Length: 359
Image (cartoon, rainbow, N blue to C red; front, side, top):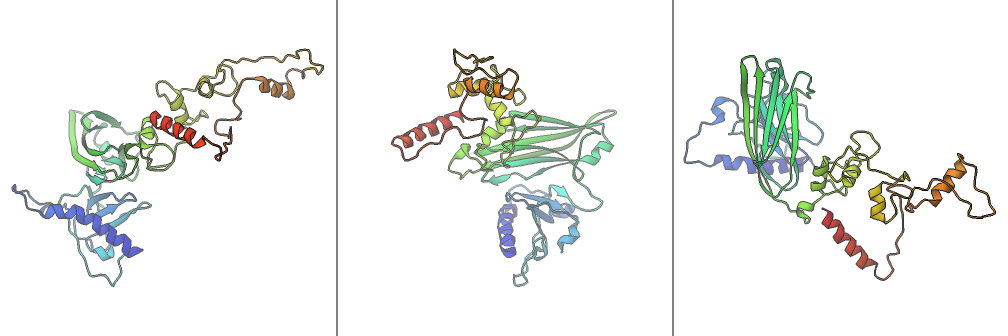
């Protein structure tokens, strides 16, 4: 198992290193001579790679003084002593980076002003891109502004101040890349202090997604029943099964509110005109009357008197006379279909087509 992880990591890293060994027509100074080349490569659970510099050769992973998160693995210069140790039966292998590392490791070096994880490259699924800012900069600047443009159109502007919450010395802003093909990301970090604004860092990355999923852009990466594009429209995480998330605690899942709102609002509680526990739009979808305001029981000449008002029996009887769906709540079973009946397969085919049209 350990050897498998190590070999797979080496394969991914080889794809990154080999292009750097090619000679270009234009001479460029190497980061090796500046001491800021990569000594450690971090791989996450999605096989994304980011590089770190320690300032010196790393013979053992403990020398890096780095704490891994769950699902992460790290390769160092002396491969056999990486975070997942290699077998002693493996031939000795050493790695050295030639490009400038994205991050800087070491007790005294801290983080570079602006970094990104994962770095640009080729990916086969939706990825989360996290822009990382050194929180220590807030000791020098009153406000730090991170401006990120995705594919020349979608511009994100995030401001960090003294009250901003950091984690492990980092301030982060994350977004997702999900479209097939190339997505260019440009980020600029500026700091505001007395005397004006200064540029602290800039990054330009290109992410190339080669989607192999049979559903293409309708794929559901986290298998929670919602396509990635729908989760992104709602504001959910397409890489985690959080479709029932209720951000504001109003009793309605964000997705349910988004689905029932003409404007895609996840804060607006759906209207329930007749107050029967079913929103107007749900009753419209199901073919029941959203304005069926049954307010009192009538005996209609029955010998059995109506229950006394303001009692549980009265309220239950009143509810039974309302025009409402069979199911008692939104996600309960309403009908059980006999799949052996003739014509059911055709019906399900039509429903499937209608569902795809919603996306």
